[in-house]
Amino acid sequence: MSDSGMFDKVVEFGMGMAMCQQIPQMMNAANQSAGQPAPPPVPKATAYFLAIDGKQYGPYTVDQLRPFVPTGQINAQTLVWCQGMSSWETAASRLELAPLFNQ
Image: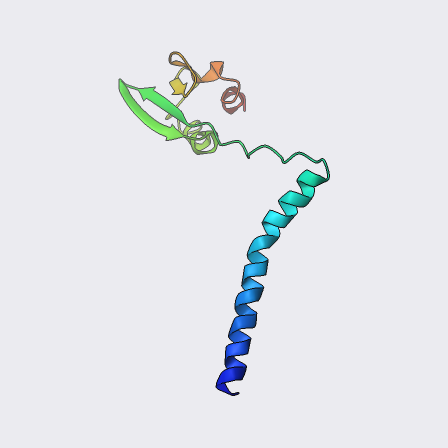
């Protein structure tokens, strides 16, 4: 392949990549122009802190806390806190954590 042919292929590749990078923007514009609102951002997992024997641990997600229950590392009376709470509460009093202790 000649240098000119190789140059043409590189330019074509670059143009293709540039077009691919614009597809998400074009899709968003099409959805908005069709009157469909964009979905809200995916919610983040709540990060809980634990108070055990006067020490603070965390942050942990609910999935990270789950294996601590059968081992007894945490129980329904363990104090927890997360952003938005005004004070520490028992784990069982939190709607998101209570099912961990009812199994």
